[in-house]
Length: 110
Image (cartoon, rainbow, N blue to C red; front, side, top):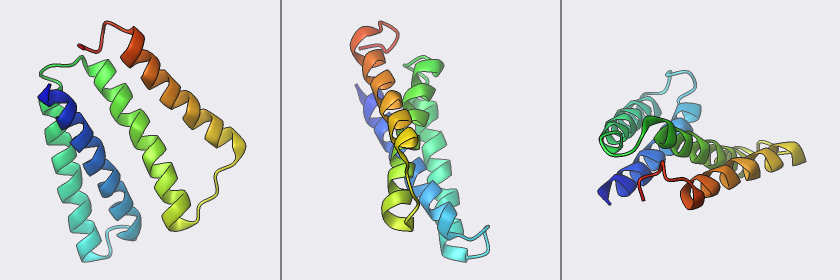
């Protein structure tokens, strides 16, 4: 069961790291750059722990899919980036795909 906690933490670190990457201004600002590197290292380390238990395809689909939705939401809220209807529908499809995998697939190891 720890692999799910590791995956949630990996997604959180990746999301924080990507947000810090935006504020690092191309690695020209020290603290956001260091935060980016620390978060990406942590995310990949935790992801490697998850891959000991869950299949790589399922793990990556969940990790990247939720990361896309979270980063797009943060971009909208924190940076004023616009999301049009096709973007919102696409993200809804991503979340739907993750739910379908979790509920109906035997590949997720639940």
